[in-house]
Length: 278
View 1 (tube, rainbow, N blue to C red):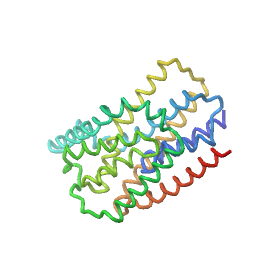
View 2 (view 1 turned 180 degrees about the vertical axis):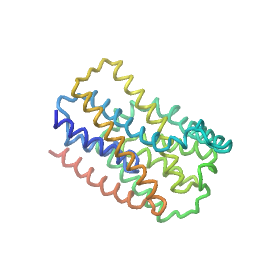
View 3 (view 1 turned 180 degrees about the horizontal axis):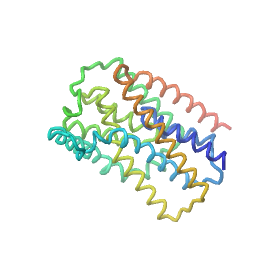
View 4 (view 1 turned 60 degrees about the vertical axis):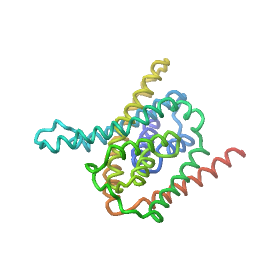
């Protein structure tokens, strides 16, 4: 029991860090599953586990930005209320591509692309894109605040978010790249990524949990404890990761994340080759 709790804490830490930094939580969790396995954990349980710890991560965004996202907060001026509703409209618009395109493809992509070679390739590809964006495409951003972001830009970022259905891409990485390519500053792209994660991650997680429960999956008391511990840890670490990234992008670019992705991708490709040979 104690060992299983320690494993859950480790998973929660990895999820909390990698969900928000543009380095792919799915890629890191797949890698972690290679070496850290729960006792008697079925594929169905692990699928539920990965979904539940995401809920812990998304709750962190809701807590940190509750006042900003709450149009009914007492003390807000009429203009602040208007901007809050506009923000939610932009978030909803950005979610449309995921609903229309993503949902029908989600299960198929999981079945065909949830593997080390794909994850490693996507880590490298988007790592190169980040470095290219920061070093060779230096364009002064037109959108320096969420209030200035158009609904069209929100929709375009939503299309980029669909790319994150391929494991190893990183939802935050795809949306940040999409924002920057569409004229937003790093800080705006990063903050909008946090907000966009609320309906997308919460909706996707809830849908998968319902599917799994409907399929008749049963879990033990120990597994319930593992789920709760991992979710709480993911929530706590996400609080730190979100605040870190928010402060980081004010003074730094994403080059370091691009380099990290490339190195990790190369390591994973090497590991996949060795595993295939053996």
